[in-house]
Amino acid sequence: MSDERLIDLESRLMHQEKLLEQLNEVVTEQQSMIERLQRELAALREQFSHVGEEQAEEPPPHY
Image (cartoon, rainbow, N blue to C red; front, side):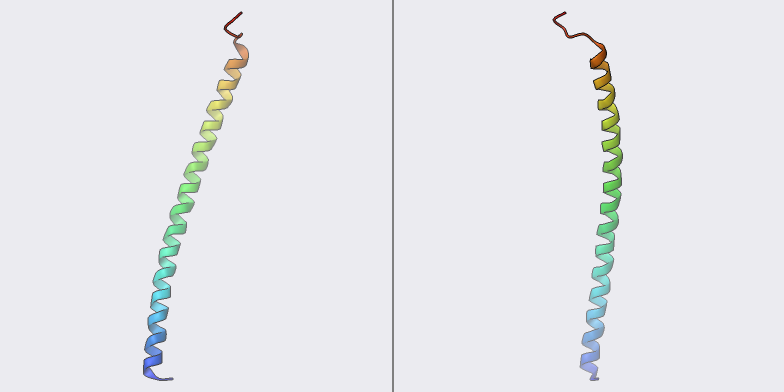
């Protein structure tokens, strides 16, 4: 294998490793965001379930 070809392959490998690290960072950030949004959604569902219970107990305003 020629030195030029070896250098080209090493350069490509370094580029791919850097790209893989960047992609891993993005995936990790997205996973954190998904987990945060899931917690927020669960909290909102909990709040709205209580609102529905309170409204069911109160008679409509025209009574």
